Image 1 (tube, rainbow, N blue to C red):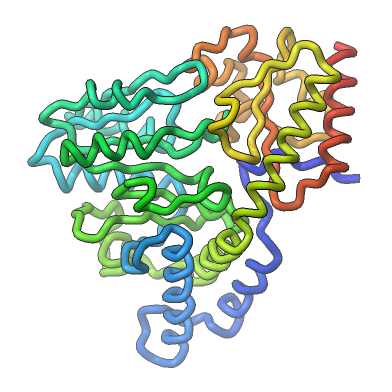
Image 2: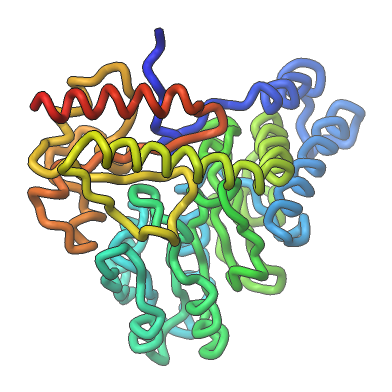
Length: 375
């Protein structure tokens, strides 16, 4: 029997329907989308349809979607692109301490090149105070970048309040929505953002494909220079099959979003309640309600999760962000939230997905509780 997969925040399996949509573009529709002949036009049609599908999920115009090589590239394009395009207006960026490394390390890179970055703290539930954002703004501030939902604890940031502050000050606003797209509503006008990051492999599309929403009318300096692909913002022949896959995945997400939220919230709560009944040392990390429906981060107080998880090979889960796999230090996200070091050491992230079942949840509770109690 295969292990129970509870690491959907690290990556999702590719949905078979997404694979079916991609196959023709790996076989017969192999042309270069920039070619004007029959083969090129077939590939171009697939890219155009995918752009419409992604735009439909985000509630924007197809022309505001730029396809990239993944979420990290989208974050880099958004942050570096704004920093260079608006350098004459200022050199200050605001972000927070629990962002994904694709944001934090991009900001640190810019600091080495003359930019100033404010890294805001978060409260014990992982949320940024919008008032702290307002206080951090200076005449030199050109960008605010805050993730929509945290990849480790699932906490959802108050983007609406922050976007209002950004608009009042004429500051561009970017969100890394890699973890939230396809899990909760991510309509760009409702969020009030100018740039939004999508990562394909977080919503049942292949790895190596992503997108960046860029609000019409704003300037952005490209990362990759060359020909005029992707509205001149991302040179290179399009990865047609994967783009088609991302489009299909977004269309599926739009069709199933409401039911998915209900189903995964119920399963997540079943998992948490089951663990609380069986284990006395469980502590929830993150916001109790403003949290992704599929994400449960708990600490087994007194345990070391880097030893606990290998002792239960029947479960595939994470001690934190997949980008930190193998680290022996506690999660930097949890430490930034003020979780005590000994509690953070016992943290396990359990993230559910499209094919998680009640039977798997009940088995996971039994396996984890038995092992924790024996230790």
